[in-house]
Image 1: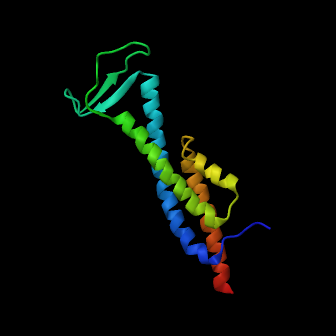
Image 2 (image 1 turned 45 degrees about the horizontal axis):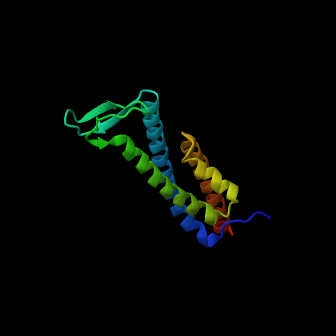
Length: 149
């Protein structure tokens, strides 16, 4: 028999689901930004710096690999900030994944599938909708059955 969530956990699951909805959208947006950064860096050979001496925002070319350059970019490296922010927020996303997965008593494969949502572009948006519908439907069904009994 498949394990079911405990009725005492239903309120906790709803709170965790709200947290998951927020983190999945933020993680998805950060991942799309990260993809844009990678395209600009590796396809076009530029990085974006903010608050440079010349402008508020400026694309600066990368030095070719193997070539030493005396040029040191000045300003805030937006690309590096996006990389770091996505990495740390992915950890928060995994926590929210665990907070839904554990009380729902799903198998470990489901946890890994949800975790992939923060790594595969656009997947978090599709998974967020699916997981929220599934969990909300389950909780609504169980709570209405308890109310009718």
